[in-house]
Image 1 (cartoon, rainbow, N blue to C red):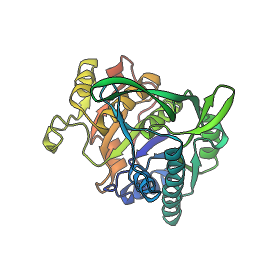
Image 2 (image 1 turned 45 degrees about the vertical axis):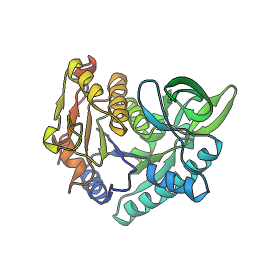
Image 3 (image 1 turned 120 degrees about the vertical axis):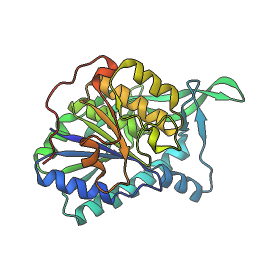
Image 4 (image 1 turned 90 degrees about the horizontal axis):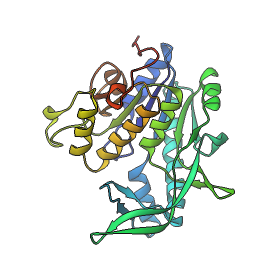
Length: 286
């Protein structure tokens, strides 16, 4: 069974452990799909172009980057650079990685979002001119073709946004991208970030929630998280609702982040938390 891995784009995340684990998994017959973001590189690129990143808050309390036309250009530039660097490092490690953007082969497709609801000065408002999208389809035939050919897809944005009768390159949340791909492949999803997982107290690793199996515990996780973790729990929930086998949110900076996550470290969110029973086979590590 294929494993989908999301690598965070924060500046404190080191991909070395991920690369070693991918080499180990693929050498032992476990196919892998990698999805990555690049939040730090995107902000640096925006600033290098003489602008400042614009962040918005939704009425639900979720923070995110507003992607106007100029920001969309910076996103495309930054993620292409991150993708090339990651694929190069994987090739150097003997991994047959192949970089893909969501527009390639119609890999990721869905409606463009032009208008978003935001909170500004305590008031709910509509902000127009956003270049983002909501994934409705994943080209699994393309992924299967690459995997069967011995390639490791390394996927990033932009995706194809449907804008009326036109298609345009748009941004999306990379955690939700990974979640959509895991759901489409009915695969487990490992979200690697710079903390041990979902915690009651973000400053206390001993407060880690190791298992989320019920709807009640999932609701509690949504309540206690904030910032970037809110988006990851939301992406995990959507992925499980749509067919992912299970989701693990775990630390990218341990020695064997993927192997440890598949073996029980981090926060494991089960399909039962969204009212589903798991389907398919569990991943057994070699």
